[in-house]
Image (tube, rainbow over all chains, first blue to last red; front, side, top):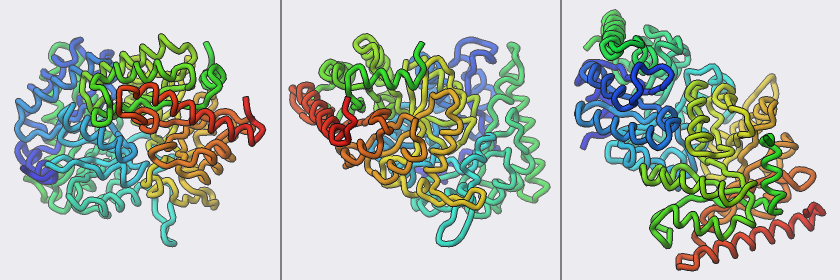
Length: 276
Length: 276
């Protein structure tokens, strides 16, 4: 079985894309009503051109048991269609060790994800019981929202040295990453923080949300997010792809939008002499 | 409709108890196999002597769709049995504003909770879209686990003044608590941090986990956690109550354990001249 870092690499290499589609079904924006059918159309239209899908748990839980059922079917469908496609469960979980072990069972076994997002506030024992067998986590480091500044940018002092909290989180995660199964989340909306994080953690995969509706800067995200070989990032776009058309052609439109983002990323990598 | 703070007050006053039972079904520890039947027996045995129940989402999600179904039935059952009983969904959620709104729909509407736990790392816009209508949140401040020290105790510097991160989180939550619908989570395993938090936030409800199996200090938790009137705390115990017996008498045993904790709390309050 591949290691987590190998899985991340293969997912991108297989399709020559760093793009991840955030599968966040919002009934008020969806052109059809059935969540699984909506996801299936998006997946069919993009599976050969994206490296990952990232269902955000909030949108499925908001639809109750039926929503959770749609999530299970969606994950099964992606597994059928894409042998190397990474499926990231975006739940931002974090709890005491014994409860976190239950969350890992939930996210990897009940819902079938390859990787999940995790919140760092509760520290080492809330992150580390990752079960192995190729599974991994992306720890929230510097998030894409305005409130990211409230705590993540605070200057913390450790042994007389000061640095922003998010950088300390990055360094601790790097220290805990003995099994190469930890990545980081850094929003495209904060390119300078992304650059700092990549400098501190040259080899960890970085999941970069915030491109598209949230207004993240794609060229900077690619330039500063990639490792020195132009690899090891996963760039997520949700609403910009899912809801690029509100008509029946939403899947065709989603594919065009995904292709456009792929081309933009390729152009930036070519400029940097880091293309495939 | 009552405000959130009023609901918290009534839940305790109604039964003269600050005790919350953490409904964390663990198939390896449960004396019967059906999760809903297990919860129902625990609820029947304790509904008249506890102020709240706190299902931890991790344990239901770990059991897949069937687990989520047991959760829904459990919450419905508590609502039928206890008009004033507070039901706290322990999910430690936290996301960007638009996703957090979906989590609030999920936790309050799909699953039916009165209050939920929330992680602060993503800041103000990840907490504030609380929908009103008597719902509330408990924000993680100083958690009960060993890893709490990794980030929550870091010294942060704001306008030249230094204080531990968890205290800054407490102060920001107090500032954001305009609608009186925010409480804090502080573990019983760290009495001094609980004392500091209560001094900074004299009027906010504090949810105190970590009593029992985690080794929290109950007398100190009561002494330092209560407000000046000896109120405004919710003391959670999970495993110590649920699994006090592994035989068929587990419900009787759970009731005895809950009564014992209630008596211990009452004795401490009497010593402090703050009894009911």
